[in-house]
Length: 136
Image 1 (cartoon, helix red, strand yellow):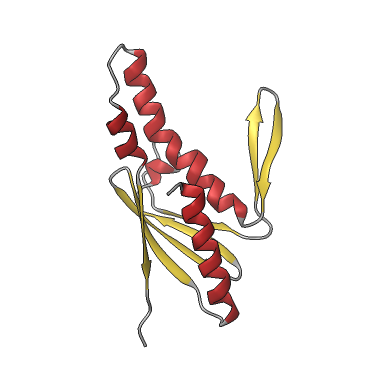
Image 2: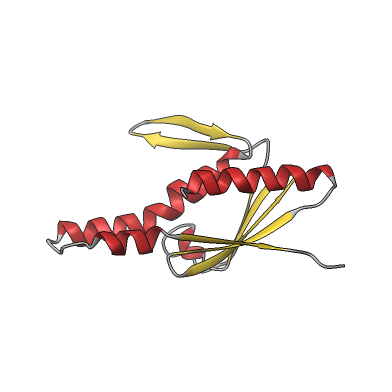
């Protein structure tokens, strides 16, 4: 199952939960690290204790909120190109940014002449997603 297929299921669950004024909380693990994604009618929040994932050298936890006002740009030379907007930015953040870290590490190994095992690439990019149920 691809990340996009998984995320489509998450969006479907969040929409259904929003109809009964509930939110959905997911624990995601990626590349031996865990973070939380909360989705509700207002948008998605990514809650992460490892600031290094946000930018190199960051030593603080962070919360990113993606809602209808969110915009994601890609910098190209001297200009910026709009990649996506709204809640869709959460999907793109996870796909583009979080995946970029292990891919860059593996690319650096390959450039040094090290043979990169395809199973290692699969392991580094494998995502586990667990829905948390609230109990009254």
